[in-house]
Length: 167
Image (cartoon, rainbow, N blue to C red; front, side):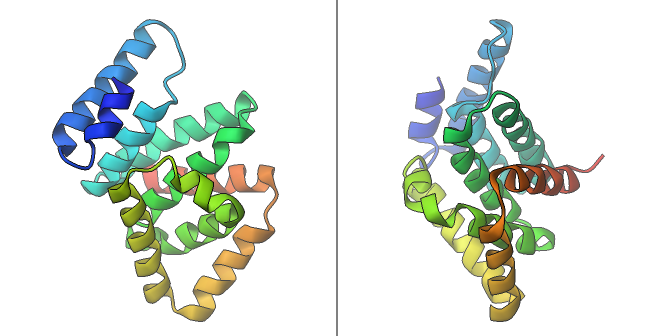
């Protein structure tokens, strides 16, 4: 189901979100972690629909799970998805730029997991953030992210997703 959700997400967002959520429900029933392609897809689709808090909650759970289980190899993708979500909300543009700086060294690999439309949303969101923030502020945020350690990146990502998710 999660592969199907990803495959159709550029063409039929409703069908993709339904498939992603069904995949998540099935994994929960089998007591397996749900932080997979399905949760990535669902979070990005929620952000595209303007459900920033729902997207942030879903992504926060995935980042926390990855950090607690030591899944460093997938954290760059998790942080890219978080940056995409944060770049969809004008109040979190600076956080998006900061996370973009943190994942810059592995960006081409991380974006390889995204569909063409998801890559476009990521790039457009960060371009919009850069234009709104201005060159100096965006560069400073990017540099802050680039200077972060793995643990600092995880903590910052969780904090920013918590803020966006709200109470």
